[in-house]
Amino acid sequence: MKVFRILIMVTLVLVVLMAGAPAMAAQEEKSVNDVSLEHKRSVFIQYPEDLNQALTKSVNAAPTALAENNKWAVVFGDNGYGNENIAGDNNARLMASTLKSVYGFNSSNIRLLVNNKFTAQSVSQSLEWLRQNTDSNSSVFLFYSGHGSPMAVLHMNTWYLNNEFSTIKYGKLCMVFEACFSGSMCDPLAGTNRVIIGSTLPDVYGTTNSSWSGFSKCFIEEGMKDALADINNDGFVSTEEAFNYMCTRTAHGTISDNYPGELVP
Image (cartoon, rainbow, N blue to C red; front, side, top):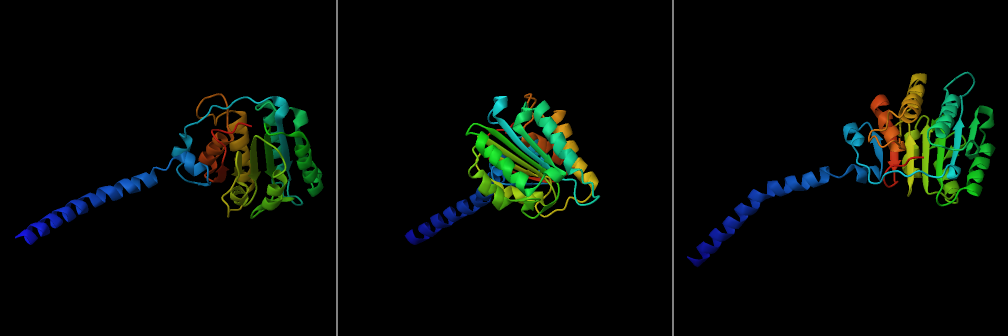
């Protein structure tokens, strides 16, 4: 009789545990699926994904204005080979103009190099110029529009840039690449206080002239210059907001975001 009672008790315990298992599994699945966008963004994001979630991302810290004389930019653009006319030079000019008119960069703090002035030597000189002028509070911005290949663009690759920026001081650093395979630049260049943006997914070509103008129009002209990307209406367009806005229009792009809050150049 005593053995029989023990068997009944064991059976009841097993029934209770089995009944609770689905609920526990559902809760565990919920906890995995509810990982915050902040956590995912801090690692690596490729688009398309849940753009509605990205566009409603909460801002941890309001952006603060930085002294104009401590904002520095190197802006590169190339029109392509022969008569290709991929508009990289015009996109670079548009970005330089936007950094001045919208974000308060001094003209003397922007190095704009396009076409025949954009060479391996001038890139090296421009990065040395940053090294000689920036400090640990500087806002540094690098933009490139032109041809690209996996983990490389013209005159620069991810190893070269990581090596250069290991000795360039900054408080926040944003690099934006508009090129074929530019999404492949994001993960290797990820780092503390950095936002790295590519106009494509890591393994995708920029296919036509319209896709190039689509990025500059959505990311730079509409998103930044016209402030249509200011989703949280705080009066500042961050690089993350411009990226999210661009993705709703072009449906592709890649970002690595390791900057706390929003990075405003």
